[in-house]
Length: 517
Image 1: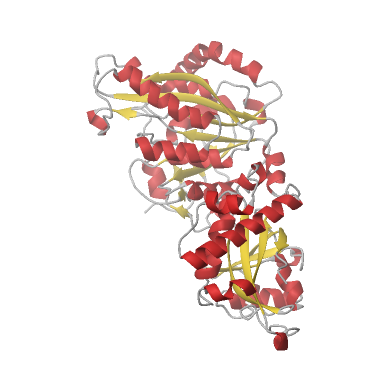
Image 2: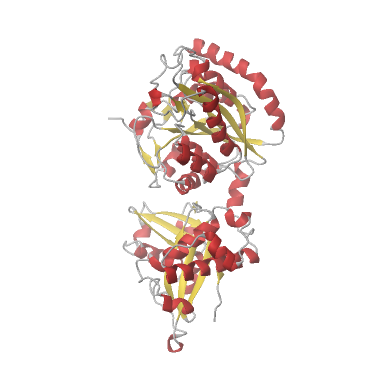
Protein backbone atom coordinates (compact mmCIF):
# COMPACT_ATOMS: atom_id res chain seq x y z
CA UNK A 1 0.00 0.00 0.00
CA UNK A 2 1.25 3.48 -0.87
CA UNK A 3 1.54 5.14 2.53
CA UNK A 4 0.74 8.76 3.31
CA UNK A 5 3.93 10.78 3.54
CA UNK A 6 6.01 8.66 1.14
CA UNK A 7 8.25 10.28 -1.43
CA UNK A 8 7.13 9.76 -5.01
CA UNK A 9 10.06 7.76 -6.46
CA UNK A 10 11.47 8.01 -9.96
CA UNK A 11 10.10 5.41 -12.34
CA UNK A 12 11.33 6.40 -15.79
CA UNK A 13 14.92 7.51 -15.07
CA UNK A 14 17.34 5.25 -16.93
CA UNK A 15 14.84 4.49 -19.67
CA UNK A 16 13.12 7.68 -20.82
CA UNK A 17 16.02 9.90 -19.72
CA UNK A 18 19.44 9.65 -18.10
CA UNK A 19 19.54 8.44 -14.48
CA UNK A 20 23.08 9.67 -13.86
CA UNK A 21 23.02 13.30 -12.62
CA UNK A 22 26.21 14.31 -14.44
CA UNK A 23 25.13 12.82 -17.76
CA UNK A 24 21.64 14.31 -17.44
CA UNK A 25 23.07 17.73 -16.58
CA UNK A 26 25.24 17.65 -19.70
CA UNK A 27 22.23 16.60 -21.78
CA UNK A 28 19.93 19.34 -20.44
CA UNK A 29 22.69 21.96 -20.71
CA UNK A 30 23.03 21.02 -24.36
CA UNK A 31 19.28 21.34 -24.90
CA UNK A 32 19.26 24.71 -23.13
CA UNK A 33 22.16 26.04 -25.19
CA UNK A 34 20.44 25.02 -28.41
CA UNK A 35 17.21 26.64 -27.23
CA UNK A 36 18.75 30.04 -26.48
CA UNK A 37 18.59 31.49 -30.02
CA UNK A 38 14.88 30.64 -30.19
CA UNK A 39 14.11 32.42 -26.93
CA UNK A 40 16.15 35.61 -27.38
CA UNK A 41 13.52 37.23 -29.61
CA UNK A 42 10.78 36.16 -27.21
CA UNK A 43 12.51 37.90 -24.32
CA UNK A 44 12.06 41.19 -26.15
CA UNK A 45 8.35 40.45 -26.61
CA UNK A 46 8.08 39.69 -22.89
CA UNK A 47 9.43 43.08 -21.82
CA UNK A 48 6.97 44.45 -19.26
CA UNK A 49 5.08 41.16 -19.23
CA UNK A 50 4.73 38.49 -16.55
CA UNK A 51 5.21 34.85 -17.53
CA UNK A 52 2.27 32.99 -15.97
CA UNK A 53 2.44 29.56 -17.58
CA UNK A 54 4.32 27.27 -19.94
CA UNK A 55 3.45 24.14 -21.89
CA UNK A 56 6.14 21.49 -22.30
CA UNK A 57 6.10 17.97 -23.84
CA UNK A 58 6.68 14.77 -21.86
CA UNK A 59 8.05 12.13 -24.25
CA UNK A 60 11.48 10.60 -23.80
CA UNK A 61 14.12 13.32 -23.82
CA UNK A 62 15.63 12.02 -27.05
CA UNK A 63 12.38 12.98 -28.75
CA UNK A 64 11.03 15.95 -26.80
CA UNK A 65 13.94 17.23 -24.68
CA UNK A 66 14.99 19.99 -27.10
CA UNK A 67 11.43 21.32 -27.20
CA UNK A 68 10.93 21.06 -23.45
CA UNK A 69 14.12 23.07 -22.92
CA UNK A 70 12.63 25.90 -24.98
CA UNK A 71 9.66 26.09 -22.61
CA UNK A 72 11.92 26.62 -19.60
CA UNK A 73 14.29 29.14 -21.22
CA UNK A 74 12.39 32.46 -20.93
CA UNK A 75 13.29 34.61 -17.89
CA UNK A 76 11.64 32.55 -15.17
CA UNK A 77 14.15 31.40 -12.56
CA UNK A 78 14.52 33.91 -9.74
CA UNK A 79 10.89 34.98 -9.87
CA UNK A 80 9.42 31.50 -9.54
CA UNK A 81 8.82 30.19 -6.05
CA UNK A 82 6.21 27.52 -6.72
CA UNK A 83 5.06 25.41 -9.68
CA UNK A 84 1.53 24.15 -10.23
CA UNK A 85 2.23 21.09 -12.36
CA UNK A 86 -0.71 19.84 -14.45
CA UNK A 87 -0.61 16.73 -16.61
CA UNK A 88 -2.75 13.88 -17.93
CA UNK A 89 -3.03 10.32 -16.70
CA UNK A 90 -2.08 7.81 -19.38
CA UNK A 91 -2.78 4.69 -17.33
CA UNK A 92 -5.99 5.21 -15.38
CA UNK A 93 -9.16 7.04 -16.30
CA UNK A 94 -11.02 9.28 -13.86
CA UNK A 95 -13.01 12.49 -13.84
CA UNK A 96 -11.91 15.77 -12.34
CA UNK A 97 -8.46 16.07 -10.80
CA UNK A 98 -6.14 13.85 -8.79
CA UNK A 99 -3.67 14.93 -6.12
CA UNK A 100 -1.31 12.81 -4.05
CA UNK A 101 -0.39 12.21 -0.41
CA UNK A 102 3.32 12.50 -1.24
CA UNK A 103 5.34 15.15 0.57
CA UNK A 104 8.10 15.20 -2.03
CA UNK A 105 8.89 14.07 -5.58
CA UNK A 106 12.28 12.57 -6.35
CA UNK A 107 14.32 13.94 -9.26
CA UNK A 108 17.73 12.91 -10.55
CA UNK A 109 19.09 16.19 -9.13
CA UNK A 110 17.45 15.89 -5.70
CA UNK A 111 13.97 16.07 -4.24
CA UNK A 112 11.31 18.69 -4.90
CA UNK A 113 9.05 19.42 -1.94
CA UNK A 114 5.27 19.32 -2.38
CA UNK A 115 3.26 22.24 -1.06
CA UNK A 116 1.20 19.93 1.15
CA UNK A 117 -0.87 22.74 2.66
CA UNK A 118 -2.25 23.68 -0.75
CA UNK A 119 -2.77 20.04 -1.73
CA UNK A 120 -4.67 19.36 1.49
CA UNK A 121 -6.92 22.35 0.89
CA UNK A 122 -7.63 21.24 -2.67
CA UNK A 123 -8.61 17.80 -1.38
CA UNK A 124 -11.54 19.34 0.47
CA UNK A 125 -13.23 19.84 -2.89
CA UNK A 126 -15.04 16.79 -4.26
CA UNK A 127 -13.44 17.17 -7.70
CA UNK A 128 -9.90 16.73 -6.31
CA UNK A 129 -9.37 13.08 -5.43
CA UNK A 130 -6.33 11.67 -3.66
CA UNK A 131 -4.93 9.06 -6.08
CA UNK A 132 -1.34 8.51 -5.01
CA UNK A 133 -0.91 5.27 -6.97
CA UNK A 134 -1.99 7.00 -10.18
CA UNK A 135 0.70 9.62 -9.60
CA UNK A 136 3.24 6.92 -8.86
CA UNK A 137 2.74 5.22 -12.23
CA UNK A 138 2.38 8.33 -14.40
CA UNK A 139 5.18 9.78 -16.53
CA UNK A 140 3.64 13.11 -17.62
CA UNK A 141 4.68 14.95 -14.47
CA UNK A 142 7.93 13.09 -13.90
CA UNK A 143 9.26 14.17 -17.28
CA UNK A 144 9.08 17.82 -16.15
CA UNK A 145 10.86 17.35 -12.82
CA UNK A 146 14.49 17.40 -13.98
CA UNK A 147 13.92 20.63 -15.93
CA UNK A 148 12.11 22.22 -12.99
CA UNK A 149 14.82 21.26 -10.51
CA UNK A 150 17.76 22.23 -12.74
CA UNK A 151 16.35 25.39 -14.32
CA UNK A 152 14.12 26.76 -11.54
CA UNK A 153 15.86 25.44 -8.43
CA UNK A 154 14.32 24.45 -5.11
CA UNK A 155 10.78 25.53 -5.84
CA UNK A 156 7.79 23.86 -4.24
CA UNK A 157 5.40 21.96 -6.48
CA UNK A 158 1.66 21.31 -6.51
CA UNK A 159 1.31 18.16 -8.66
CA UNK A 160 -2.15 17.66 -10.17
CA UNK A 161 -3.27 15.09 -12.72
CA UNK A 162 -6.25 16.23 -14.77
CA UNK A 163 -8.81 13.57 -15.71
CA UNK A 164 -11.74 13.66 -18.11
CA UNK A 165 -13.73 16.90 -18.37
CA UNK A 166 -17.08 17.01 -20.13
CA UNK A 167 -17.01 20.63 -21.21
CA UNK A 168 -15.61 24.08 -20.60
CA UNK A 169 -17.65 24.42 -17.40
CA UNK A 170 -15.76 21.53 -15.83
CA UNK A 171 -12.47 23.21 -16.75
CA UNK A 172 -13.61 26.47 -15.20
CA UNK A 173 -14.66 24.73 -12.00
CA UNK A 174 -11.24 23.14 -11.49
CA UNK A 175 -9.55 26.38 -12.49
CA UNK A 176 -11.52 28.36 -9.92
CA UNK A 177 -10.35 26.03 -7.15
CA UNK A 178 -6.73 26.25 -8.29
CA UNK A 179 -6.84 30.01 -8.89
CA UNK A 180 -7.84 30.69 -5.30
CA UNK A 181 -4.35 29.49 -4.30
CA UNK A 182 -2.30 31.34 -6.93
CA UNK A 183 0.02 34.20 -6.05
CA UNK A 184 2.76 36.19 -7.73
CA UNK A 185 5.78 33.93 -8.07
CA UNK A 186 3.68 30.93 -9.11
CA UNK A 187 4.14 29.27 -12.50
CA UNK A 188 1.67 26.92 -14.18
CA UNK A 189 3.40 24.10 -16.07
CA UNK A 190 1.14 22.02 -18.30
CA UNK A 191 2.71 18.77 -19.46
CA UNK A 192 1.31 17.77 -22.85
CA UNK A 193 2.27 16.29 -26.16
CA UNK A 194 0.08 17.20 -29.10
CA UNK A 195 -1.20 15.20 -32.09
CA UNK A 196 -0.51 11.45 -31.92
CA UNK A 197 -0.96 10.36 -35.53
CA UNK A 198 -0.84 6.89 -37.06
CA UNK A 199 -1.94 3.27 -36.65
CA UNK A 200 -0.07 2.99 -33.36
CA UNK A 201 -2.41 5.58 -31.87
CA UNK A 202 -5.59 4.70 -33.76
CA UNK A 203 -5.78 8.16 -35.28
CA UNK A 204 -5.49 8.53 -39.05
CA UNK A 205 -7.79 11.40 -40.12
CA UNK A 206 -5.75 11.82 -43.30
CA UNK A 207 -3.60 9.44 -45.26
CA UNK A 208 -1.49 11.72 -47.41
CA UNK A 209 1.00 14.49 -46.73
CA UNK A 210 1.31 13.40 -43.13
CA UNK A 211 3.85 16.02 -42.07
CA UNK A 212 1.97 18.96 -43.56
CA UNK A 213 -1.44 17.86 -42.34
CA UNK A 214 -0.23 17.02 -38.84
CA UNK A 215 1.36 20.45 -38.54
CA UNK A 216 -1.79 22.10 -39.84
CA UNK A 217 -3.81 20.31 -37.14
CA UNK A 218 -1.33 21.27 -34.42
CA UNK A 219 -1.27 24.90 -35.51
CA UNK A 220 -5.07 25.04 -35.44
CA UNK A 221 -4.97 23.76 -31.85
CA UNK A 222 -2.35 26.38 -31.01
CA UNK A 223 -4.46 29.14 -32.57
CA UNK A 224 -7.05 28.68 -29.81
CA UNK A 225 -4.40 28.44 -27.11
CA UNK A 226 -2.66 31.57 -28.36
CA UNK A 227 -5.74 33.75 -28.01
CA UNK A 228 -6.96 32.07 -24.82
CA UNK A 229 -10.17 30.75 -26.42
CA UNK A 230 -11.45 28.01 -24.13
CA UNK A 231 -14.75 27.41 -25.95
CA UNK A 232 -13.00 27.39 -29.31
CA UNK A 233 -10.40 24.92 -28.05
CA UNK A 234 -13.04 22.55 -26.70
CA UNK A 235 -15.05 22.81 -29.94
CA UNK A 236 -11.89 22.06 -31.94
CA UNK A 237 -11.19 19.00 -29.79
CA UNK A 238 -14.74 17.68 -30.10
CA UNK A 239 -14.78 18.29 -33.86
CA UNK A 240 -11.40 16.75 -34.69
CA UNK A 241 -10.97 14.29 -31.78
CA UNK A 242 -7.33 15.32 -31.97
CA UNK A 243 -5.15 13.05 -29.83
CA UNK A 244 -3.70 15.76 -27.58
CA UNK A 245 -2.95 13.81 -24.42
CA UNK A 246 -2.97 16.88 -22.17
CA UNK A 247 -6.10 18.38 -23.70
CA UNK A 248 -7.92 18.68 -20.37
CA UNK A 249 -4.94 20.20 -18.58
CA UNK A 250 -4.68 22.74 -21.40
CA UNK A 251 -8.39 23.50 -20.99
CA UNK A 252 -7.90 24.16 -17.26
CA UNK A 253 -4.98 26.43 -18.13
CA UNK A 254 -7.13 28.47 -20.51
CA UNK A 255 -9.75 28.81 -17.77
CA UNK A 256 -7.05 30.02 -15.37
CA UNK A 257 -5.43 32.61 -17.62
CA UNK A 258 -6.58 36.25 -17.62
CA UNK A 259 -8.29 37.67 -20.68
CA UNK A 260 -5.20 39.54 -21.84
CA UNK A 261 -2.92 36.49 -21.72
CA UNK A 262 -1.16 35.60 -24.97
CA UNK A 263 0.48 32.33 -25.96
CA UNK A 264 3.91 32.41 -27.66
CA UNK A 265 5.04 29.38 -29.67
CA UNK A 266 8.79 28.92 -29.25
CA UNK A 267 9.43 25.51 -30.79
CA UNK A 268 7.60 22.92 -32.83
CA UNK A 269 8.77 19.48 -33.92
CA UNK A 270 7.55 15.89 -34.16
CA UNK A 271 8.94 12.49 -33.29
CA UNK A 272 9.65 12.02 -37.00
CA UNK A 273 12.40 14.60 -36.62
CA UNK A 274 14.20 12.09 -34.38
CA UNK A 275 13.15 8.75 -35.88
CA UNK A 276 13.10 9.33 -39.60
CA UNK A 277 12.54 5.67 -40.46
CA UNK A 278 9.08 5.68 -38.85
CA UNK A 279 6.96 6.80 -41.79
CA UNK A 280 3.50 5.94 -40.47
CA UNK A 281 3.37 7.40 -36.94
CA UNK A 282 4.00 10.85 -35.51
CA UNK A 283 3.81 12.62 -32.15
CA UNK A 284 3.96 16.42 -31.98
CA UNK A 285 5.76 18.56 -29.42
CA UNK A 286 5.13 22.27 -28.80
CA UNK A 287 6.91 24.68 -26.45
CA UNK A 288 4.51 27.47 -25.45
CA UNK A 289 4.90 30.38 -23.04
CA UNK A 290 1.92 32.41 -21.78
CA UNK A 291 2.37 35.99 -20.62
CA UNK A 292 0.15 38.82 -19.41
CA UNK A 293 0.55 42.38 -18.21
CA UNK A 294 0.27 41.49 -14.53
CA UNK A 295 0.97 38.63 -12.13
CA UNK A 296 -1.54 36.36 -10.45
CA UNK A 297 -2.30 38.71 -7.55
CA UNK A 298 -3.80 41.37 -9.80
CA UNK A 299 -5.89 38.82 -11.67
CA UNK A 300 -7.20 37.32 -8.43
CA UNK A 301 -8.23 40.77 -7.26
CA UNK A 302 -10.06 41.46 -10.53
CA UNK A 303 -12.08 38.26 -10.09
CA UNK A 304 -13.32 39.69 -6.78
CA UNK A 305 -14.36 43.02 -8.31
CA UNK A 306 -18.03 43.50 -9.17
CA UNK A 307 -17.75 47.19 -10.00
CA UNK A 308 -17.55 46.47 -13.72
CA UNK A 309 -21.30 45.82 -13.97
CA UNK A 310 -22.97 49.03 -15.11
CA UNK A 311 -26.63 49.88 -14.60
CA UNK A 312 -27.21 49.06 -18.27
CA UNK A 313 -25.59 45.65 -17.73
CA UNK A 314 -27.87 44.97 -14.76
CA UNK A 315 -30.98 45.90 -16.69
CA UNK A 316 -29.82 43.76 -19.62
CA UNK A 317 -29.44 40.77 -17.31
CA UNK A 318 -32.91 41.30 -15.83
CA UNK A 319 -34.44 41.56 -19.30
CA UNK A 320 -32.53 38.44 -20.31
CA UNK A 321 -33.85 36.54 -17.30
CA UNK A 322 -37.41 37.75 -17.89
CA UNK A 323 -37.34 36.77 -21.54
CA UNK A 324 -35.88 33.38 -20.71
CA UNK A 325 -38.47 32.74 -17.99
CA UNK A 326 -41.46 33.62 -20.13
CA UNK A 327 -40.22 31.74 -23.17
CA UNK A 328 -39.37 28.61 -21.15
CA UNK A 329 -42.49 28.51 -18.98
CA UNK A 330 -44.86 29.29 -21.86
CA UNK A 331 -43.25 27.09 -24.49
CA UNK A 332 -41.58 24.35 -22.44
CA UNK A 333 -38.33 24.65 -24.39
CA UNK A 334 -35.04 26.36 -23.68
CA UNK A 335 -34.73 29.51 -25.79
CA UNK A 336 -31.56 30.40 -27.65
CA UNK A 337 -29.80 33.60 -26.73
CA UNK A 338 -30.52 35.25 -30.08
CA UNK A 339 -34.27 34.91 -29.63
CA UNK A 340 -34.30 36.41 -26.14
CA UNK A 341 -31.66 39.01 -26.96
CA UNK A 342 -33.53 40.40 -29.94
CA UNK A 343 -36.72 40.81 -27.95
CA UNK A 344 -34.96 42.28 -24.91
CA UNK A 345 -32.53 44.59 -26.74
CA UNK A 346 -29.58 43.10 -24.84
CA UNK A 347 -26.09 44.40 -25.46
CA UNK A 348 -23.79 41.38 -25.13
CA UNK A 349 -20.58 43.12 -24.10
CA UNK A 350 -17.35 41.74 -22.63
CA UNK A 351 -18.64 42.09 -19.06
CA UNK A 352 -21.62 39.81 -19.74
CA UNK A 353 -19.38 37.28 -21.47
CA UNK A 354 -17.07 37.05 -18.46
CA UNK A 355 -17.49 33.80 -16.45
CA UNK A 356 -19.12 34.64 -13.13
CA UNK A 357 -20.92 32.89 -10.32
CA UNK A 358 -24.60 33.84 -10.26
CA UNK A 359 -27.86 32.96 -8.50
CA UNK A 360 -31.32 33.58 -9.92
CA UNK A 361 -34.12 33.92 -7.38
CA UNK A 362 -37.82 33.98 -8.24
CA UNK A 363 -40.42 35.58 -5.97
CA UNK A 364 -44.19 35.38 -6.25
CA UNK A 365 -46.15 38.44 -5.20
CA UNK A 366 -48.52 37.70 -2.33
CA UNK A 367 -52.22 38.58 -2.26
CA UNK A 368 -53.04 41.83 -0.46
CA UNK A 369 -54.21 40.08 2.71
CA UNK A 370 -50.83 38.35 3.17
CA UNK A 371 -48.56 41.28 2.41
CA UNK A 372 -46.37 42.45 5.25
CA UNK A 373 -45.94 38.96 6.67
CA UNK A 374 -42.43 37.57 7.07
CA UNK A 375 -41.42 33.98 6.61
CA UNK A 376 -40.00 32.10 9.57
CA UNK A 377 -37.49 30.05 7.55
CA UNK A 378 -35.64 30.08 4.29
CA UNK A 379 -38.03 27.64 2.58
CA UNK A 380 -41.15 29.77 2.86
CA UNK A 381 -39.06 32.89 2.37
CA UNK A 382 -41.87 35.45 2.55
CA UNK A 383 -40.66 39.04 2.57
CA UNK A 384 -41.93 42.44 1.64
CA UNK A 385 -45.18 41.20 0.15
CA UNK A 386 -43.69 38.31 -1.80
CA UNK A 387 -42.57 34.75 -1.21
CA UNK A 388 -39.77 32.61 -2.53
CA UNK A 389 -40.73 30.65 -5.66
CA UNK A 390 -37.35 29.18 -6.64
CA UNK A 391 -33.64 29.85 -6.27
CA UNK A 392 -30.76 28.09 -8.03
CA UNK A 393 -27.31 29.20 -9.09
CA UNK A 394 -23.67 28.53 -9.83
CA UNK A 395 -21.37 29.49 -6.98
CA UNK A 396 -18.26 29.16 -9.12
CA UNK A 397 -17.65 31.04 -12.41
CA UNK A 398 -18.29 28.04 -14.64
CA UNK A 399 -20.20 29.79 -17.45
CA UNK A 400 -20.21 33.20 -19.10
CA UNK A 401 -22.50 35.45 -17.09
CA UNK A 402 -25.24 35.74 -19.72
CA UNK A 403 -25.38 31.94 -20.15
CA UNK A 404 -25.37 31.39 -16.39
CA UNK A 405 -28.33 33.76 -15.98
CA UNK A 406 -30.33 31.98 -18.69
CA UNK A 407 -29.60 28.49 -17.38
CA UNK A 408 -30.26 29.32 -13.75
CA UNK A 409 -33.48 31.14 -14.61
CA UNK A 410 -34.78 27.97 -16.24
CA UNK A 411 -33.56 25.86 -13.33
CA UNK A 412 -35.06 28.17 -10.69
CA UNK A 413 -38.51 27.89 -12.25
CA UNK A 414 -38.41 24.14 -12.83
CA UNK A 415 -35.72 22.30 -10.84
CA UNK A 416 -35.85 23.73 -7.31
CA UNK A 417 -37.09 20.61 -5.50
CA UNK A 418 -38.78 22.68 -2.80
CA UNK A 419 -41.40 23.89 -5.28
CA UNK A 420 -43.58 22.75 -8.16
CA UNK A 421 -42.56 24.15 -11.56
CA UNK A 422 -43.79 27.64 -12.34
CA UNK A 423 -47.01 27.66 -14.39
CA UNK A 424 -47.80 30.13 -17.20
CA UNK A 425 -50.59 31.69 -15.15
CA UNK A 426 -48.09 32.72 -12.47
CA UNK A 427 -45.78 34.70 -14.74
CA UNK A 428 -47.50 38.03 -14.17
CA UNK A 429 -46.89 37.70 -10.42
CA UNK A 430 -43.25 36.55 -10.58
CA UNK A 431 -40.41 38.94 -9.86
CA UNK A 432 -36.77 38.10 -10.56
CA UNK A 433 -33.67 38.82 -8.52
CA UNK A 434 -30.16 38.17 -9.87
CA UNK A 435 -27.11 37.98 -7.61
CA UNK A 436 -23.68 38.05 -9.27
CA UNK A 437 -20.97 36.57 -7.05
CA UNK A 438 -17.28 36.92 -6.44
CA UNK A 439 -15.21 33.73 -6.25
CA UNK A 440 -15.51 32.18 -2.75
CA UNK A 441 -12.50 32.56 -0.46
CA UNK A 442 -11.64 30.45 2.57
CA UNK A 443 -11.73 32.04 6.02
CA UNK A 444 -9.67 30.82 8.94
CA UNK A 445 -12.55 31.01 11.39
CA UNK A 446 -16.30 31.53 11.40
CA UNK A 447 -15.55 34.67 13.40
CA UNK A 448 -14.21 36.25 10.19
CA UNK A 449 -17.65 36.08 8.55
CA UNK A 450 -19.38 39.46 8.20
CA UNK A 451 -23.14 39.09 8.56
CA UNK A 452 -24.97 40.97 5.83
CA UNK A 453 -21.81 41.50 3.76
CA UNK A 454 -20.58 37.97 3.12
CA UNK A 455 -22.36 35.09 1.51
CA UNK A 456 -21.40 31.90 3.32
CA UNK A 457 -20.57 28.37 2.20
CA UNK A 458 -20.54 25.70 4.90
CA UNK A 459 -18.71 22.39 4.37
CA UNK A 460 -19.38 19.91 7.15
CA UNK A 461 -19.60 16.12 7.50
CA UNK A 462 -19.57 15.58 3.74
CA UNK A 463 -22.38 18.09 3.13
CA UNK A 464 -22.54 21.71 2.11
CA UNK A 465 -25.00 24.58 1.99
CA UNK A 466 -24.95 28.23 1.01
CA UNK A 467 -26.66 31.50 1.87
CA UNK A 468 -26.43 34.66 -0.22
CA UNK A 469 -25.22 37.74 1.68
CA UNK A 470 -28.64 39.34 2.16
CA UNK A 471 -30.36 36.28 3.64
CA UNK A 472 -29.21 36.85 7.22
CA UNK A 473 -30.18 40.52 7.12
CA UNK A 474 -33.64 39.84 5.74
CA UNK A 475 -34.42 37.32 8.47
CA UNK A 476 -32.78 39.31 11.24
CA UNK A 477 -30.23 36.65 12.14
CA UNK A 478 -27.00 37.18 14.00
CA UNK A 479 -23.91 35.12 13.11
CA UNK A 480 -24.71 32.15 15.35
CA UNK A 481 -28.26 31.89 14.03
CA UNK A 482 -27.07 32.26 10.43
CA UNK A 483 -24.67 29.36 10.81
CA UNK A 484 -27.26 27.26 12.66
CA UNK A 485 -29.73 27.84 9.82
CA UNK A 486 -26.99 26.99 7.34
CA UNK A 487 -26.32 23.69 9.12
CA UNK A 488 -30.06 22.96 9.17
CA UNK A 489 -30.26 23.68 5.43
CA UNK A 490 -27.49 21.10 4.88
CA UNK A 491 -29.56 18.49 6.74
CA UNK A 492 -27.31 18.57 9.80
CA UNK A 493 -27.97 19.32 13.49
CA UNK A 494 -28.18 23.07 14.09
CA UNK A 495 -24.89 23.21 15.97
CA UNK A 496 -22.94 21.05 13.53
CA UNK A 497 -21.14 24.18 12.32
CA UNK A 498 -19.26 24.20 15.62
CA UNK A 499 -17.67 20.77 14.95
CA UNK A 500 -13.87 20.71 14.40
CA UNK A 501 -14.15 19.61 10.77
CA UNK A 502 -16.46 22.42 9.67
CA UNK A 503 -15.03 24.81 7.05
CA UNK A 504 -16.31 28.11 5.74
CA UNK A 505 -15.90 30.12 2.57
CA UNK A 506 -17.23 33.60 1.94
CA UNK A 507 -18.11 35.60 -1.14
CA UNK A 508 -19.71 38.91 -1.94
CA UNK A 509 -22.57 39.62 -4.30
CA UNK A 510 -24.17 42.45 -6.18
CA UNK A 511 -27.91 42.01 -6.59
CA UNK A 512 -30.45 43.45 -9.00
CA UNK A 513 -34.24 43.13 -8.80
CA UNK A 514 -37.17 43.58 -11.09
CA UNK A 515 -39.87 45.98 -9.96
CA UNK A 516 -42.99 44.89 -11.79
CA UNK A 517 -45.66 46.28 -9.43
